[in-house]
Length: 438
Image (cartoon, rainbow, N blue to C red; front, side):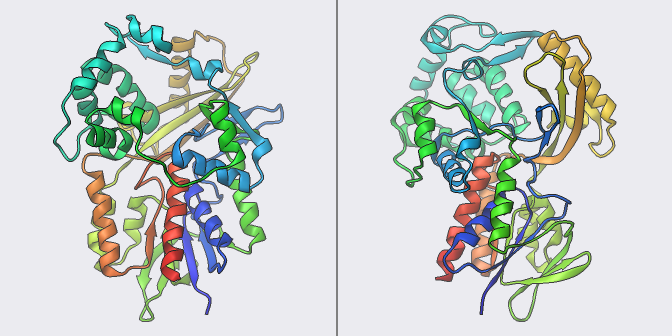
């Protein structure tokens, strides 16, 4: 009898899980359940009649590493090679990075010259931070905040300025609360393996799985810093949906879940607002806290760990100006959303728009009124991997294994918040599931 796998959550993680299930030689019956009215999750693009594309979520993907190559391989398999818009390493957008510090915009150092001389906002050459790192002893703690880790190895100034800004940009979070082991595992492992982050990154950690494709080879040859898609990032989930329709995958929007229960036949009974679904295995691609609410009382040990994974909200304001080549995007809030704007459920769009226009004036000197604006609040969109996150994920994995629960956890709540991470974790979860079925 054909098994049924229910994938809960139709963002990029859930769609990718369905994709790999559908491509397997003995594909199970696949049911995708999405609570909202659209698939694609945070990959959401608005295309206008005049050719402008506004991204309301991620606007680019990095090609580097195993996870980057894995995404490019899937893009190729979906036939999207011609739609890829790369940003090569010699492009101004790759070379020019800026920090806004003390009410001034500073270009970050690039090349050997920038490392050897003092470049504002830093008070001495970054070379000294590198030399300090090479001489620093290996850390002894099982986990550490990102700020503490960088301060200990590279100095407080680099942590206060560059790393603080990086964590705001990547995680919309506070580097003084986020875990280096979970947010930047490559840095943590480099120190553990080589005693030095710099040596560890230079010497590498061995080869990952072979995920070669013409796109990834091109990305390497042209030194892409990142890439996007001609029709916007939502092109990727749209291509996945087309593939899944052709393979007969059941996809349901407005399928709001109410409860997950186990039946006497050891199946999952998934209660919806307007019906129910039975499945032999559930792949959860919804946020950790959303899953915790659905679990039965006997799974409280798992629900407790899931509830401990918080997420922050981000205001995304798209601005288009007459004569400007590209739309401008301003992101607001994150770990400081409630402090700066109040409740994300009730904040007026006018407040976010005003703050965004004020930032554009201060940072870029643009005083004109935008010709088009779009304001969205992405509620609880970026999970925060705080200290001890690795222990929480290990505890959950152990619980699922010990209880023999046919439940897989994928998505940004667990093993990485980037699009690449989500796609890779979905693929690995499906691989494990199919291996168990053999």
